[in-house]
Image 1 (spheres, helix red, strand yellow):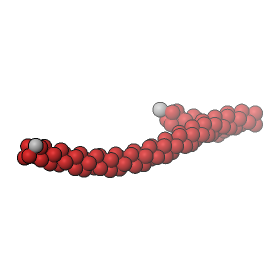
Image 2 (cartoon, helix red, strand yellow):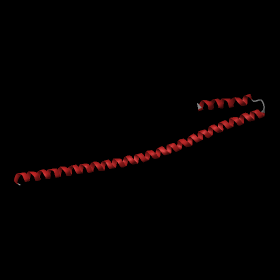
Image 3 (cartoon, helix red, strand yellow):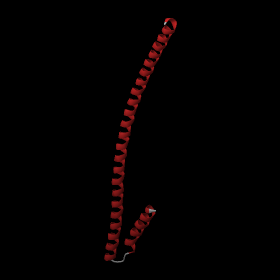
Image 4 (cartoon, one colour):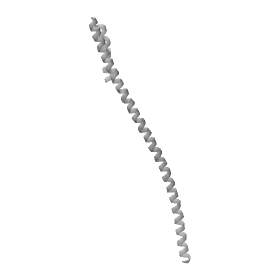
Length: 108
């Protein structure tokens, strides 16, 4: 919608100088065209600035998320290793307990 409006305004301003009869009318038409072009440029600059800021924020969030993912992967690895060690220790103590019960039952 904004693009269509801008195009219509641009076409209207392009036609104004051709229709103007006097130097004053031509000057007025040129001033109006300049103002419209200036407004469009200011809007485009504001949009660009906003897009740059949004991109910078998104890049920072991405870097933060990548760091968090790396830390989570490291914690997962450490937790997996700790779980494996605990399971092995539990199996060892289970065997020792079974052997102790067997010795108790065998000879008391």
